[in-house]
Amino acid sequence: MTFWNVEFLEPQKTATTSAGRALIILNQPFSEALVLRLWSATQWHCCADGGANRLFDILGTARRSLFIPDLIKGDLDSVRNDVKDFYASRGVPIVQDPDQDSTDLMKCVAAIQDKEAQEQNEYGIILLGGLSGRLDQTVHTLSYLHRLRKTRKHMFAVTDDNVGWVLDAGEHIIHVDHAILGPTCGLLPVGIDSTVLSTTGLKWNLSDAESSFDGLISTSNHLVTDEETVGIKTSRPIWWTVELRPIESVVEVY
Image 1 (tube, one colour):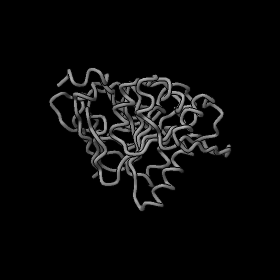
Image 2 (image 1 turned 30 degrees about the vertical axis):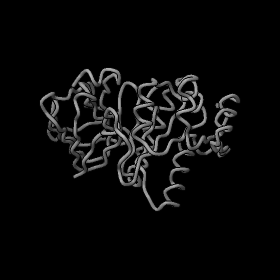
Image 3 (image 1 turned 90 degrees about the horizontal axis):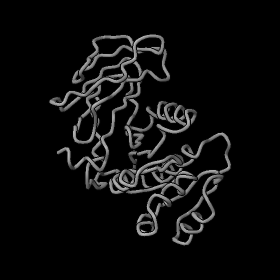
């Protein structure tokens, strides 16, 4: 049984886990509210190439100097010169990795793995972006996290619309904070031919139901407001996605 939560999305949450969390900012649009929420819940911050442009632009002059990443890494074909100059002047390492067989996301994960090896520690990884924008980039995120499921215990992708992660074969309990999540959710058989699913805590539960791209896919399912957990049993790895309520509205929902 594997237990999951998204406490890093809770208001005023700070990175208090023993291992810590790392944030990778991808080159996709995001709101200021979301990046500030995730920044406060993570201990190490990395921009993947053009993700540095996104951070620089969204914060504006007043906040920009208060949120300095620990690293900018990628093939550096997207980050602007003014952004590089700004962060370099504040001591941020800017690392160019020309490897054409790895994406900027993969390069940043490699940097986290190097950090983990030095510290003898393991970070939970939060991706800001990766599930919106260009379809090929989204598919890469789906594929890459699917491949990493055996070696990384906690790796999430977050956009302003939703949060998602891979559930490996087995049984899972997901804690649901309805002030943050919902109402819609989905169980996606990505990267597999089919799986057999059973669920609890959803509006339309499944009982030993086969799910595949050629058949049933549980999309637009709903969380149940008086259920604090969702239970999922799957015979093969799947993607779990759940809608993220607007960050500005989180406090009002309580």
